[in-house]
Image (cartoon, rainbow, N blue to C red; front, side, top):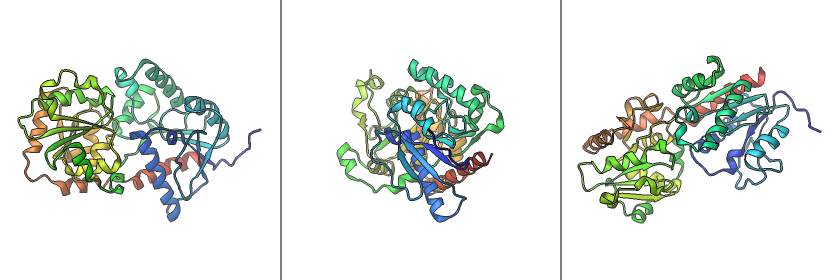
Length: 363
């Protein structure tokens, strides 16, 4: 028998706490951490918040005001679709990332981008079809949708056919990178010298355009700078690059402390993506004062304004040209970068998100 709860009860879909950390999991964790701080400071109206997580979740966060409860018997998508709606019954459910249960109707959902619709070839068939169907259903049944940028808001309105007033955009932040202590040992470990490498962070997703970046680097008119790539290794990206393989370092997984050091000592950071809903890595780089080169594509011009140098992601020649221009700048405006990034905070993200959730709770 399901226990009835107050309409002011808020549950959070905590499946992200059982997953490896990528950008969307980072968002969920930082958003809830900032919300916990707002609750502790008495800055916003509070209601009971319970994060529901699968039974296989380990290393649970220690939030002061947010309760975490392990529920259900299943894991993964089965937990999300079967266990979660049972235990969230009667309350408002907030899903900050990933999928969401079709059977729960009092729902606020963050959809970070329209990737499965805009760039379907970047995903395998099962993933693409599942999220296309799921998001179309959820867009009709949810009380409110949240996304990361105005670019994504307009994309989701177009693909999911939702009303303008049903979806809001709330910017993210890169300030969490300041929380991690430097780990300068990573430079020696990777054979890197300060100011003598261009940094990129990426995954196997073709949207990250690492292949185009590697091609661009072969055209760079400098010989004393290497390209260092952090993130999941993908041998297919580097096929045919034997002639300049010595100038490309695949670092694989790095810790947050190592990543902070890599940002701070890089000559510049490059993010040549074909498609992004927001772009946390270049914002992390700007937070530390590192010059960035990003694509003139998707949400990136909206987010980075005059703080970035822009490249054409479809032209390795232009990517190389813009990297070269940044490397030749002997006085990069690091303080300007830091000032620009400082306007994006997790507190602001939490305040705006909480306002949306309160409206939904009281609707």
